[in-house]
Length: 99
Image (cartoon, rainbow, N blue to C red):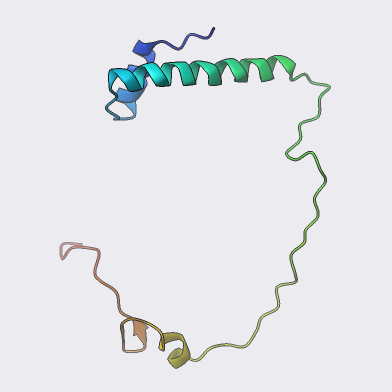
């Protein structure tokens, strides 16, 4: 068993600014305990002679060459825009006046 306790889970909740109910604390204690135990098992198996892998099957790049195509005119770009003005997309302001 790892050292994950309900008090530790509550403390982590406070650090993350997450309000946790007693039911959530109980559930998360078990889940985090299982995660930490599994990480310990993997760490115990990992030795310097075992080569780290990111994928068990060798992969090759299957992407096509990036070839530039024809360019669109500003009119073509804006033809389906919900709102445009002065050759630009028009969007709702997200910043207040003070910025």
